[in-house]
Image 1 (cartoon, helix red, strand yellow):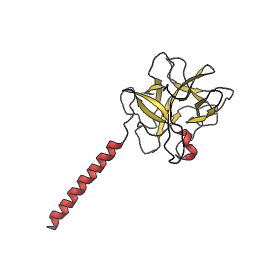
Image 2 (spheres, one colour):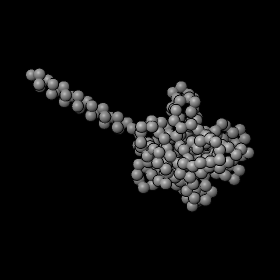
Image 3 (cartoon, one colour):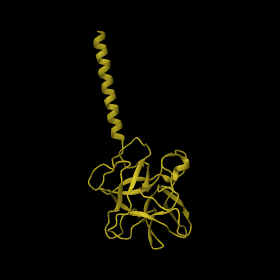
Image 4 (cartoon, one colour):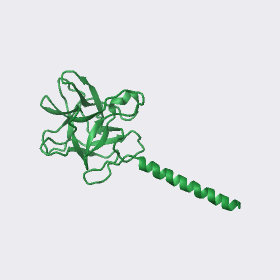
Length: 207
């Protein structure tokens, strides 16, 4: 009798555990795929490229306005240029796969003359243009109120494409802006900035 009861308990525990694991897996956001339809992985170099041809190339760094540093995030003028490679760091560093709708640090794999990091962050509001531009000098990791401007998301856009979004969820009590990332012409450069209705449609190519 005890053996039967022990077997039944183990059987029910196994079913419950498997259902819990399956439920947890089902709740995970979809993985981001590169141009070869492979999983995009944290810490690996990728190029962020435009889907629509004839409107510039990949992403790179440049000084804009009157300031030399930090460098801002801009799009290459020429379609044939891939720009600089970048890496992604999910808010949970143990997650090796980059997923949609998940907070990420985005970092250029490049050195600059500036002392700041090449981690993306949202710059302060620019009153002259009415825009929030994407710059560098952010902090990698350390999710919370102090780093709220350093987190971006990748969201699906259409069937197979993606867009970049600023809508951080690393601080439960912080009031944040939630907008797509688009392209804004500034001083002859194609600068990345938040947009209301013109998201930058992108694809990710392994470097």
